[in-house]
Image 1 (cartoon, rainbow, N blue to C red):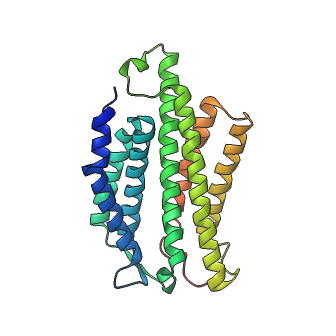
Image 2: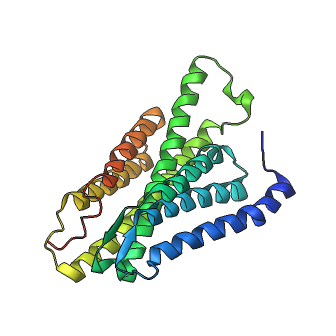
Image 3: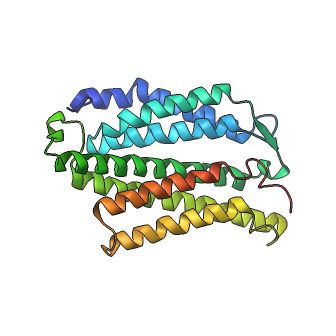
Length: 244
């Protein structure tokens, strides 16, 4: 079942949905730029940015491939994140927050985590379909879930995009930190956890390319890695930019 097909899908994405997404990203950009308090960074900006990335990914998939399955998950999660943005009032202050590279660091890192999350959704759906197919349940009769081969390709695509974005975020953050403080503090917990997550996913992609890890095992390792990478959000929240 293709919910947004042909001219209707094009009109929807080019019309109200496109305008809403542009406005949403604009609001997130204004928060990221800090308004009248450039040394302040609000958690609302991160929530809005994550919601915008998820919505943009879903729209891009529908536009380019016609695949609507990921919107079933991504758009409700994006709406929840917008709700969190409205409820969140946590604000951090640091002179580094007014520098342009900091905004690029946050944007790339958040985008990377969003791609990792979409990879976990794709991998989890793959495992679900394998289990149902083994039980001879005709899940394709629903016409909602993508074929196994396509899910596998989506998992690779999301993971590659996540590694590229997250790696860029880490590189920008490391450059800015070294510029401000030198090498001191580079081995702080949050930085180490972020680097470990990036190395794990890069290694997993390399193993997948060599066909060392495929099928359900590949999907399970992807999900495990994504769950572990979420610990980045819990370590040194708002304090990992303090001077060493």
